Length: 315
Figure 1 (tube, rainbow, N blue to C red):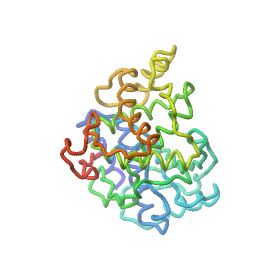
Figure 2: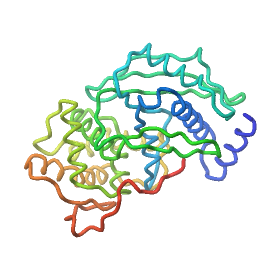
Figure 3: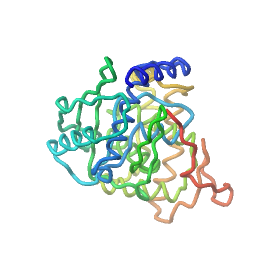
Figure 4: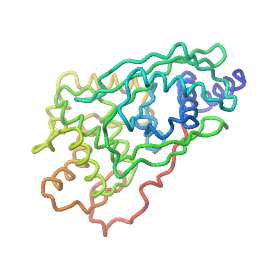
């Protein structure tokens, strides 16, 4: 089975012009998620991060090596290590992967601004190929309007993981909160790209996005900005080193697709998010809709669609 899976992944990588190791990594993450979804722990975690960005689809994608989860209850490092061991021990259909329970290790980490979590690492094998798996778990956040049932697509024709997933609105709200707190010291360039991808590729309800931003800032005890965050100003995008950091990130992250300059991306993000902040300060609601790429428009001027029905992008 391992040799067959290896050959099929290699064939797909060549057909799509993608690095084989990238697809191998995604395959291992996908099959771990399947094991999680089949375990007794499946309702204790919510999928977030780059894997959800892939699920939502968009005009481009970035590679990732991590699984990001929200733990619905605070869990210790030792307990998470045992949970991961329990997941990889679940009896599932043969998919060629062997997870090494003896390699599972955990540690406390800083996930974002004023936001701690737990990182669990382990190894998996597909034949002679050895794959490092990293699972980052955060706690205490709130998903607006609530977690979604997700059927995550499979790279090959294996059973798909069915688990809880984040909403785009909450993903944006959390990245925005980090952007505000970190100020000029912000090096989380992937957050800028992720917000831009979502704003370019999806429709948003102003009321729902405002609700998510308000809930996230309150939960993380962060005041709403009363002036334009520095990241949305030329002071940030033209700062010495920022352009170099941006170009280095695009190369390192193997971002697929055409990406504007950092200045243009920050300008669009500002146009996307500052009206939400202004509305929250006015406390009179934000009954507007964002079409893919913007701008905000009155609800009556936008053809309403179910924003949860954007096409799913298969990895």
